[in-house]
Image (cartoon, rainbow, N blue to C red; front, side):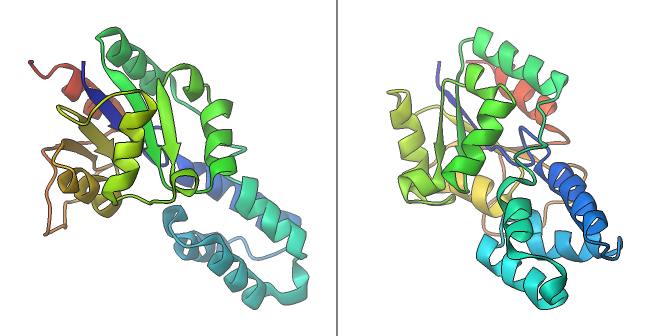
Length: 216
């Protein structure tokens, strides 16, 4: 069977919920305003803002109120320490693998952090392989990271599907390599213009099931 390429953050795991929980604790520990959680989540932008930029923003806002190591701890391990793999997503992945799909995680980010999420949630035992942008030197939507993903399992991209929540990284990335895609909308309207997903699903389980149930 062909590849099922899967985004990690906010697709397989709820990275934003995990990071928000870490942020709430961070603010409480340092006696900072609780409502600043929204500011910091906006700065973080779902993890797409470079960590150095987030760190500079935090230092500029709080100065000496927060020591540097505390900021680094939040940004390096805040989400990785808290993400979980939900039982429904786990079941959907098992079903896909049982149906013969080869599962490969394709994620942007730093290798240590992303692999901590993969191993900590047990995804390493469910996926047949994974690639992290830092390790391969290319970020989604660059075609190179998808070709690297296929290479990890000795496969090609022919007949592959890509599932992810990001219009730019995942859906445009899939279009760039000529594979079909499912956008995990989480209730959001599609606002992209350059590329459109093959399908839209409200959640990851529905997205995986729609691919598994695709004839031939």
